[in-house]
Length: 361
Ligand code: PMP
Image 1 (spheres, protein in one colour):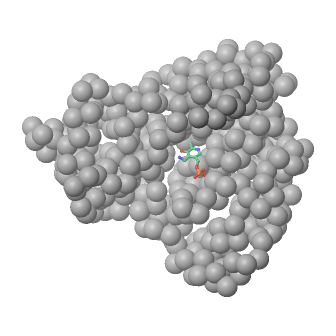
Image 2: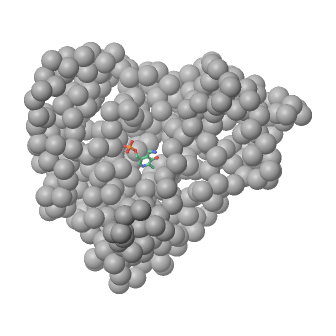
């Protein structure tokens, strides 16, 4: 045992637990636990990864200029105000490092993403959990929770694991009502699944207290590559660039992301299949007596009558080789989060839940 001790509060941080990918003794599993793109990576991204192997002895660029230019062109943004990170997780964590510390408060919603809390605690700030209204962000509750110590307000829109979202007018009202010293972080990890939604980019441009984060892990099918980005006021981006690792993104990751961005056919197919199968899955589960909130993302939150029933269903699904996500740590003990897979996976999970509801154990 070392004699050195970690900073106060570090040992209070709950370890992030990712989605399972296997079940002991069960083969041929389908993984619907991490909101990954069921179509795998785009062929263009795979080819870019192969090509990047020729230059693995070289350091990657530190400024991510090519990827930022490609993102700016694809989304109609100012490339200078984009920062790239090792997943959007890194951007969220950098924001905590840069703007919060002991004595400061960091707001997140009741069923908000785990990294907000971890990021706040890792810099000694106090995470403040704000209740939601029936699994939907409550702007009034957030505004009421703000104090002179509030530095960051994290809002995932759509939210994980609920799948719900609030409209732009509500987000605007939130940004407009924050105290001067606070920044709104609009986490758009699932924004691409919402038709016509720019993730809050126009709001970032209209205001000086909003940062938007996005990812290549979901619609773009690159969870394993770890590429995310943020778009914010110039001075915030400048601050974050000073504290990130200079070579945070590998050349392989940069190449893959740029190629994925350009593969619009893959992106469109992923989006439209998700929309179609999400509706199908929600309806199939409802027919089996399992309701869910209208989801705007690539997963649905299936609700059961009790924690025991949700647990029993999870165990049954695992025995059938279907892995979904328990969300007890998100204060949703009666629910299971199910990623919208490809058609065969959706049919299989719906069939298994039907069998479970019919008494199979
Ligand atoms: N925000 C939300 C709401 C998420 O669900 C996730 C992924 N689980 C992330 C951010 C982080 O994604 P990544 O680091 O892969 O970009």
